[in-house]
Image (tube, rainbow, N blue to C red):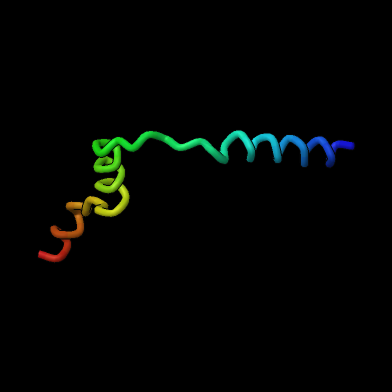
Length: 50
């Protein structure tokens, strides 16, 4: 019985999110890409090499 409920619930959740799309915000994309694709270097590594 619980498995049937879980299947029905999962299908309802999938159906409700299938048409959902967040609005695109260029500022938020820049913040994300700077944090994810361009990780900041740690300053301690440079002092260890000199």
